[in-house]
Length: 106
Image (tube, rainbow, N blue to C red; front, side):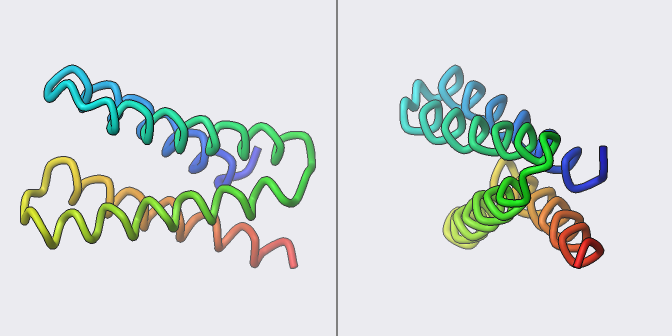
């Protein structure tokens, strides 16, 4: 298991947990749905990477990049570090690891 798979798995779990926390604290169904869908897509991408499917890494990069953009805009709009700043920083870190793994295999 390489670091790209671990990054996709960890960021997927973090997205799911964040969606649940957003629902519990603010009764935001949008947070619950978006966190669950994006988190499950990242877990699915990690699973397919484990199975040797190269498109799993592409899916993980696309979902992570979309989340980074979303949370970066949210951070600029709200100027609150939690959760937008944390998710932006961790997403950029995960994205860097994923892209590095893709480039290492080429």
